[in-house]
Length: 495
Image 1: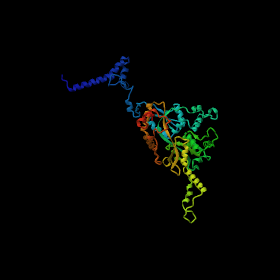
Image 2: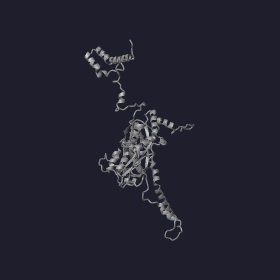
Image 3: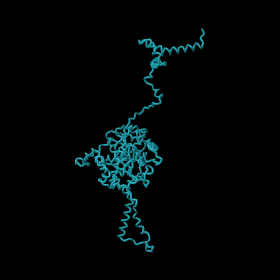
Image 4: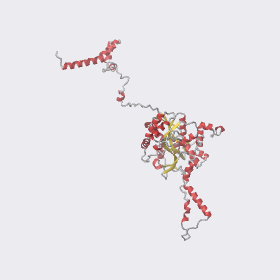
């Protein structure tokens, strides 16, 4: 018998067909018969698509398609491919005392995506943020360096008074004397935060409508009603004290006389939305806000309402004349005398008059410098600032630069966070300083304002905060590697 190649190929095909028929039809029939099923039911299931889908012709057993099908996620374009976080970073709570549209919130959006996973929690103020840290309700936040340092030092009577009001402490009772160490311990529980680094500055704004008769800061004492953002009241209070505005006058300015309900007639607003809404409705003659110039709500308000911004720094009045001009005739000829001879030296009485005139002129000229020195007695961390109004806001001001003050916000973290995680966060924070600032600038750029900024998140100033604020251990390790801090040891001291 001669076997041709054709016969071999035919035999192979028959074997494949028989194997396929056995695995998909004959074997299931035999299994069902052994299990006691009827012949008709067995044949029906064997040749049905439901029965065949439970078996694979590629293997003699049941397939695992039903139990785990990874290919289905790749085939279905409506299902995202989820990547696991290999380093397992838990989400931490980010405190935001500045409200919606604040620069702290814009930073939080970038922070969440590029630096560390966070969940934003609204707080009422910087003081409330400190207490939430103590109660372990938040883990990370930007806090005013001025408020945090004064809280740690316990050396500000105005802050103590605000804390007593927050605790609803009746200070008229002898046992609630604010100088008592027991009361201070109650108002100032120990803080449990450490610094990661410097963040950004916030500026002080006194805003009025374009047609208001308020032209300088002291004009708000002339029967005006001033709305104040709750988180900004600490700064407003101390500026008023520096201007020698009495507490009674301050209370009148921050009380809505048209509202007869004593429980709701305060003009200290907890949210920026409520403050702006009442200002637009002309319920307030002016509003005071401490915020970053890129605050979205402030920018939106400036587009919808014609505003003016009042200088916070003390300045000489627009119509003030230099007293030195009165002395210029001493250098020239005597008017109406017809002679070129200079006048004779003044007698003793005239010398005293001239001396007082020069002194009065110098006092007028240096009024800003004197006030800047005075305000340092009320604030330990405050810097004079000139804000370009044409760059950040639309206003009806005749001047382009606003002379105000600013204070720095410091990024702090709760002490209970592991040092390794803090180091990871700090490293990412450093690497994203410029990217974060530029990303916010590009995302919220307004072509009509050209509101780019370059003064936030400076690398060289990361550790330039007050020494009473401890540096987080994890951040310290990173800053040593960066060369921003270093230690030297000798026989006498450690630096």
